[in-house]
Image (cartoon, rainbow, N blue to C red; front, side):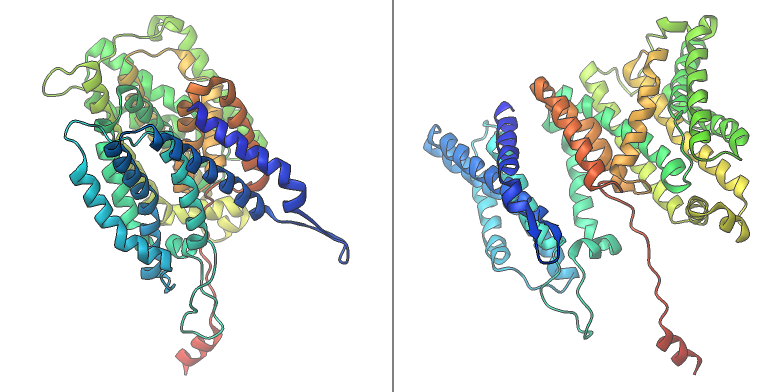
Length: 493
């Protein structure tokens, strides 16, 4: 991992050195400065790719002949698979001509994969985690993916004068093109606990919990435009609901799961009703106070919540037989995976429903929204209640996973992290929330091995996102409707 960080830093250093020459261009005739950002991307990826090739060659020299052949094939397969998918989507959905390199890859990758499978020893693990694989894989995906996804070109469509959209635009509008990728991600997610260690599975459970929290807050902020800084309070309500009901009454996880959702929705209504007339900074201050009130109540009501000492020995989700800690973590992983898929499905349906369009109208203009006949009160309350529902749900999961909770698990910092996931990923965008959680939760965990560089890289990335992508990494795409006057006239005739 240290070599990976060193390679990334060397690439950034080359980008910094060549920045004044290759990125900044002064046009003295028109008196303007042209920023050629793509040149910096090419420099960084080129240096990264050269380092990967150099270290891969050094690594192959140290291997035996059999291992050398096997690892070479594995690297080729790793690089070729995403390119194949992009080529298939491009030719199927955008009428772009198939690149000659893609034709070659399609003819080679299947035989290489078969040879790799047949030559692999029975008891030898494949070297998937060698760091040259990680160095070679992202540049190939980014370079070929950039030209396949974002560059407009290739053949024109049959309508004269109409420019062909990029592949990314087509995929955002046509979800059928994304189905192979969704299926691949689902298969990898189902097999993930069997491929990694216990620690990585535990991290992934936390990652999915943060995604669901981000999707819940995305309803309130991203869709309805209501700034909520006390969202962690609903998370705490769900966690303490399960801890107390399990501790005093012995209720199991599956009974308390819907109870946590209902209690979260009720608390969302209790918060939403007094703040119906507030917006912006005033709403943020009130919701911030609500989150702190909940935390202080949990911390000082010792006779009921056990105060700062918290509640321990919370039961894990029951299974048919007794599970070890590792088996229980895998079981929790699959439970959380199912709840995450359910959350994505429900939030997507809500976003495209009547109430979802009402939230978007409320976010854009409250006066126009009310003039269109939308009940502003019910729309706001629905946003608070439905957003808090998912926080209560994962609060129950969090208590069952950790088997111990106390008020310090639900501080203002947790609310800020959830808000950052939504803002960095892209407000109103479900893929954006997942990307934001990946950047803010998963990547820092993976970089714990290089503690001295972790926060430096994390802070630099946050600054770059806010400067170059203020709308978020994967911003929500707005539908555009265009009035065709000629078609309307012909229809009336």
